[in-house]
Length: 536
Image (cartoon, rainbow, N blue to C red; front, side, top):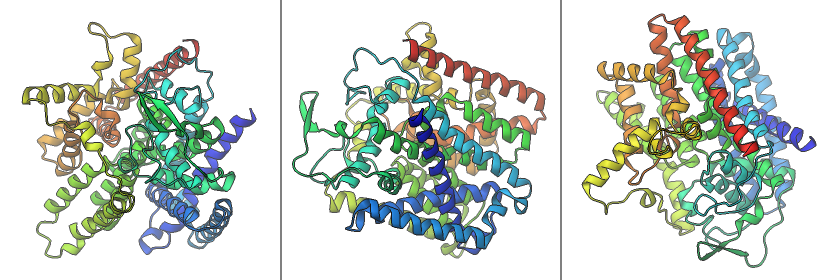
């Protein structure tokens, strides 16, 4: 019980710190002091994650004891943030009277954000019955620790949830990335930017940082080769502390969803319905629980898209996409799509400094910083694209694989039986596909709305949504489930336009019937999976 309460308390404290730091940073500008409600909440969280990452760099860059570094830096940052909140009235604009109608939505979105982090943490304390044998492939590390249990809970997911934790341990233990490599079998550091790891550093160091590594790194044998024994870092106590941070960061996608649902003009009832569907979705819960930072990247993608559509400063949109890339490299395709959107929208603007140029400069600097450190300084090259894109297969094979992957994006049939899918297969489809993210009862409306957007020649939808979706689905030369490999933000967009489609047609009763039924189905799926995990 003490461990459970401690984990929940640390999760909530992390969320408060992110919001506190970010709100202070945002309120440093005149534009930031004009924000309120959900918009202020979203930007505060975005800049709060950035602030934590910067503090993380500071902790491991100052050659003193890391615990002392973290304590001093966090204390100074917290004092500054508290003073800034008081001086600029952040609390009143966020949750109080100055926020007006938006304050209600901000309070609900903030509560939902914390719940989206707390509920998955509670799930990790379930007495999961571990399989008798953990096969090679998904299970690089074979034990019953929390990070492996999470892989089992999501249906034999790969060990990617362990990579950000290992990167944080390398930094805290002073293990040289260039000498002790790869981080995991087949996963070099250059494949995985480390925003989540950096953001976790101050919080891990202020508690009880691990001892610095000395001597040779032990190895373990896997698939016939010797690899750095990073499994020794992942005891439950250490990983849960990291998990609390990763849950808070991945749960930020709910705030991104709240901002988008508000931006498309949903009334309070429709907006609330969208959040309830999101919070009960097996897909979004799974993407939050699994500590690969794809939902964090999706949050920044949505925040960048909103910045462009709302015609805020384009350098801010570029910065948000840089943070998305530093969370996960799939954001690179959104950079391309958003640049195309700006190029078309601002083609008649005689002054490029207002549009594409600031966006491109910020994106370029962000990419160069990562590539210079990982590829030039550490001399570690990335092979992430080569792992997924093959040019050796014939044209027919390429077309076949991509056609199947389009279907897998919505309903992952490769996880079903060859005849009728089993109940377990349907549950796994809800965890992996857009059918679980949007909801099987809301997906048809989302597709109708998408078709309407194409007919209306909506440049926002075609360039900002369809183009990156096509690029992400098209990159895989083997059978895959693209919905979990970069389409998290797209799932939110489809949920938003499905509700907007019903609101425009005054289908309020029908909407609540569908939403109620969808939430019930989501809960049934979660209970079924939980029962299967506990009882085998």
